[in-house]
Image 1 (cartoon, rainbow, N blue to C red):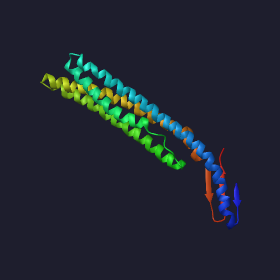
Image 2 (cartoon, rainbow, N blue to C red):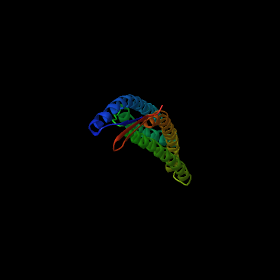
Image 3 (cartoon, rainbow, N blue to C red):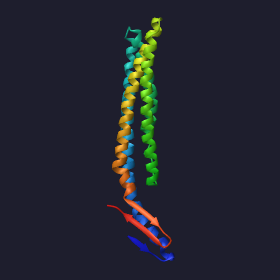
Image 4 (spheres, rainbow, N blue to C red):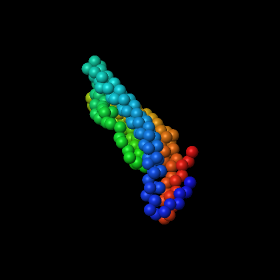
Length: 203
């Protein structure tokens, strides 16, 4: 609908619909932000569980007699410690508060890109693991052979697991974005001309 107002009433005419829209958007934005926060927490719980499992399983280092397996469990434990150091602070972080739906959109796109970039790096880790196994084949020293092979197997495993997590998080955040955030962005449009305030709400 179009509202034509005298100049002296323009501020009032502009402010009233914005107050109503802001209240509606605040609820919608809060709902989306909560979903976004929950997705992040779920991902960090998975990462924490995986990291803890690697650290605990590292105890097998002391029971196995295979040098290759010792290096495998040693590397897994190291990855677990690093992943735990990343996951716990993120898991304990509070839900962000947004005043603008466009700021939410900007942050959402950055998060999706980060997960996608991380997924690409995970594939590099997997390739690096296979490279270590190839290096192991050319070693004449048995300890170095076991080290490169054990480390290589661990890096392949860790890279594959992180790839599965990052791809899942990318997909889930993208779907959440398309399902909820796009509707918040697209359902309202406000325009201001020299003598006219345009307010459009799409249902």
